[in-house]
Length: 362
Image (cartoon, rainbow, N blue to C red; front, side):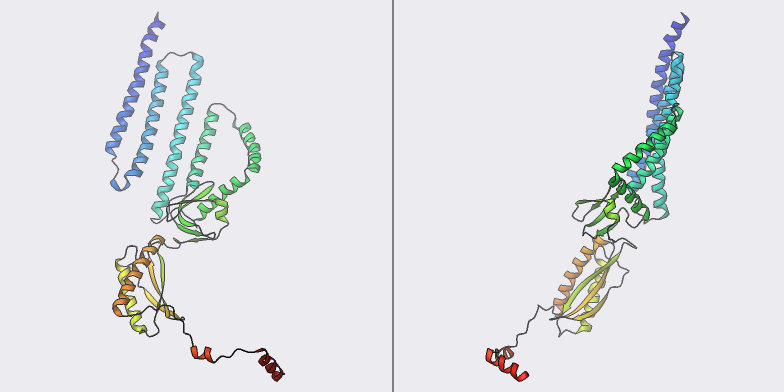
């Protein structure tokens, strides 16, 4: 009779504890969202971080509720040890999941804080950190459940050798991706050009391939091993701003001092007002050649990054052409001079004349 009464009041109490725990988790969630409202500039990142913390707290609350309910409910004695082990394993799994998320976020935070211009961390590095922590947590869970780890590690080691032989290309891409990410010569967000003429912004460096987004908003997938063996030009190293060189030619009758002055005025105006220009840079002109129909020179401008070179070059050519027209400076068409007198006086060599010239020469 006493046991029956205990069952009648302990089961509702256990269910009540689960309900109360769930309500407390929901209330805590809403309170944290109101208290830690993220600022507008970092709203998305902080909202994601807050969602991770809230999920972790809710998991802990759920585990706590289950543990408390199991103490009030009536279970066979043989079940209690298994329930306790399952709860401990779930707790370790929850802590491992949260620790993996936390370590990746701390890594990203400290890298960006140490250098404000640092590029985002490649996905292959984040995944390596995350997987390493998850593997360690899994081994701890197996040890907690009483499963021997040594035979498992031996089996995994032997199987790993067989897998490595069959996945040589995949492992080559994996290690090449880690090497590229650690070396820092190619970073996420950099604009690069490969020896095979592909170019664009590096979107991510993953375990198998690197994804590059072109200026036409297309995606180019390059295996990491191919990228590691390719000659790559990085337009964001050592700095993002880069030179913009525009080739110009003027007529031979032009006053070169006046040409240089007018061109410099236009170039300084573009640097100060054009989108993507570098106002603190002082552009300059250098004459470098006498061409067939013009005197050629180069104008050296500067853009904030590679994509801005198109805008800066576009604005400068338009302004310079308009200003040259106003100043009467001529950009000549290609010129060919034909000497008609020389062509008229030239006599074709006849076979007899060739023979006489050959005998005279001998």
